[in-house]
Image 1 (cartoon, rainbow, N blue to C red):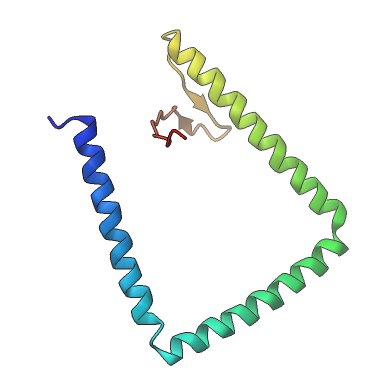
Image 2 (cartoon, one colour):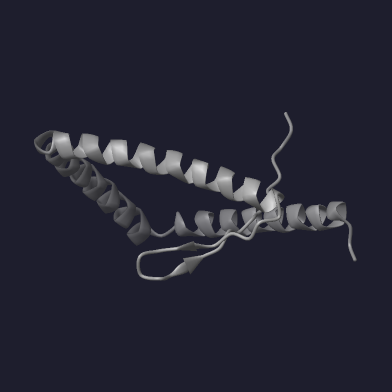
Length: 117
């Protein structure tokens, strides 16, 4: 069984190679005139889309504010839900959540690594 360090080193090498391949593909796309024209068209359309969204948000400012509040509340509730689930798991209790439609959910635990600065 490989060690954590060996797997990590292998992962880093693959990410580096992936980055190099992406760079080659990006550079080759930049040589196509049609691609450049499409990028310009996309940029114009994104600008137009943003203008329409800004107008809509001004017209529906109350709803937009409600949406922002819901987003914050949902994020907060998700943190609380995760904390309670983790505490119950640590205590050895089983965890299962059921929706109104009898769809069951169980927790999924993941481990990520963060660079130490």
